[in-house]
Image 1 (cartoon, one colour):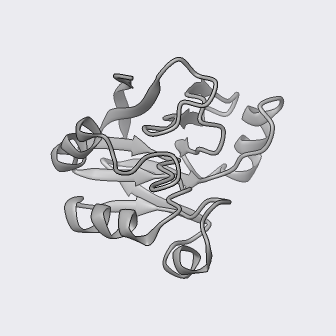
Image 2: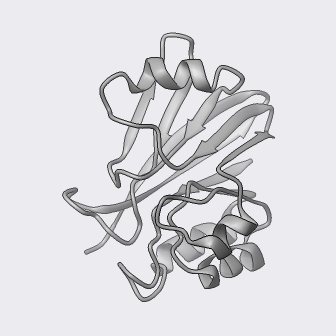
Length: 165
């Protein structure tokens, strides 16, 4: 399964629309995992219409309309890999240990909030992935998202994609 991992789209506050490269990845993916901070329901509607499968949560910037449609935490098995998706994981210090305790039923945790790409593995084997933001680089040099492959219980070919300024 080809996966697209994204978060913190913040449309229309940080960008008027999603980048064309991200839209192309949505069309190519078997599943899209979005870790919250949509800001508007139109972006959720767009991904629900375009994605073959959407696994998504709300973030701290998402109001009542989005929170009514999305969970705080999502869990799904894709390609035999157990995923958890959440927006916030707390401070970077101690993140692996904290998330290993909170998401001990997952192989991979996809999260957002910081807009900072992250790819680490906790002591229990939980892989933590933050794809950054495709619309708001904040203090990062690039706007980003991730793709990956999931098959036979293994996550592979995890790639961070940088978007042009």
